[in-house]
Length: 112
Image 1: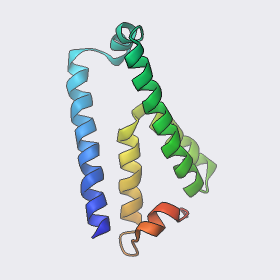
Image 2 (image 1 turned 45 degrees about the vertical axis):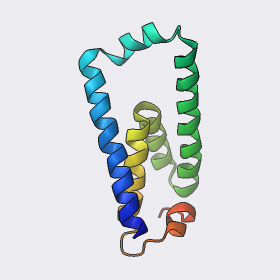
Image 3 (image 1 turned 90 degrees about the horizontal axis):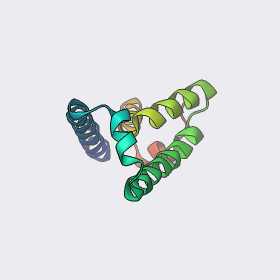
C-alpha cells in the first residue's frame, strides 16, 4: 500500500512541476524573470527556503547513495531542476524496491 501511495504522490508532484514549469516558460525565460524578481525580498526568501529544502533532501540522498558519481549527478539535477529531480529520485527508489518495498528500506536503506 505504501509503495502505491508514494508512487501516486510523487507522480503527481512530478507532473504538477512539469506542467507549471512549462506553463511559466511560455510566458518568459527563467533568467529574465529572475532579473525582475531578485529585488523582491520575499522572492529571495522563498528561493533561499527552496534551496535549503533541496540541500536537506540531498543530504538524505547522499547518505543513501554509495557512489560519488551518482551523488554528484543527483546534486546537479536537484540544484537545476528542484522538485522535478527530487520526485524522480523517489519514484526511482520506490521502483527499485517494488518487490521488497518497505518505508524503512526507502528511508534508511542504502542504495547498491
